[in-house]
Image (cartoon, rainbow, N blue to C red; front, side):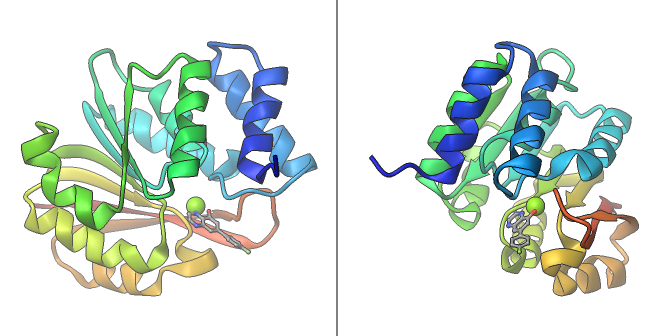
Length: 214
Ligand SMILES: Oc1cc(-c2ccc(F)cc2)cc2nccnc12
Ligand SMILES: [Mg+2]
């Protein structure tokens, strides 16, 4: 059967990484994607910045927009305290299936719930259907044209509280200029930019942190 890149990444992890060892699985994905096939995981350079911000936030509730193969999900899950609630939204059913297997292999499947569907459909249902109140940390890593509408949706649905940390990937490459403009000009956010590079590349990229002020 014709294989897709994401399946090859998962197969490489299943055959070469240590089951139940999240960091080893993250390292295996980085090795495969830097040596064999580029893929849009956040990668290790931006991943270390992500780790630092997650650790500083020490969130009890996490939302990720854009699961992909589960790379950032595994990175974040290994940093969460026991009992933390981590929801990740993935629109592509094939990617969701890959990520589910990645989380099982990493031993983090009890920490993460994958919600299959579009962010615009799922976000309005989070309070009612998934018993969420607000999120302490949100990693935005799906399609850049959804960054602003989904941020506004999170506000409108009352899913942000004073101190909620939004962290957006790819604000330089492929770029999310409208998101930068929105959060940097909105008094309700305090923004910090973290210059870095596109995963497995020397192209410039950056993460943007936007802390909700309530
Ligand atoms: O980190 C990323 C990188 C890219 C991407 C695609 C093509 C290129 F040429 C360069 C970069 C797309 C992404 N889409 C969604 C979430 N994250 C992404
Ligand atoms: Mg990305």
